[in-house]
Every structure is written in C-alpha cells, then in structure tokens.
Image (tube, rainbow, N blue to C red; front, side):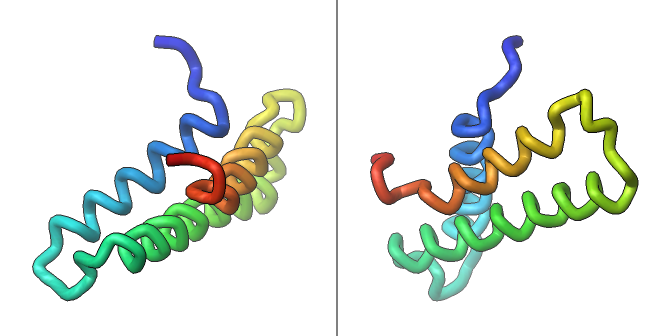
Length: 83
C-alpha cells in the first residue's frame, strides 16, 4: 500500500472522528456540529503527535514532523474547499 499524503491522512482522521460522533447516542447528530467536532478532535490528535515528536527529538531526516505539520494544515482547511 502506498504511503498516504498529508491531505489523505487529514481526511481519514476527520472522517474517523465524524463516524465516532455520529454513531454515539447523543444530540451530536447534526451535520455541522459533527463536522466541527470531528475537525477539532483530529487537530487535537495531530497536535499531540507533533508535540511528542518534538519532545522526543524526532529524527529530522525522517520528514515525520513536516508530514504531521502538513496534516494539521490540511485538517484546518478541510471542508473549506473539499466536499
């Protein structure tokens, strides 16, 4: 399987959190609210990954930090131009 792009990873994370929220028995079933919350949850997860990479002095040659920064940017813009 080919490596995911930051845009693909961003979409996957937001989608996974959206499914989680929509499946819960709560009042969060409204599409706009679910979309906002899923983006926020995905951003929290990515920020934790970025912070962990920084704290543990990631290997800058691996490109991991840059990848996750791009994923964060894609999540922040997700839904503004994407269906």
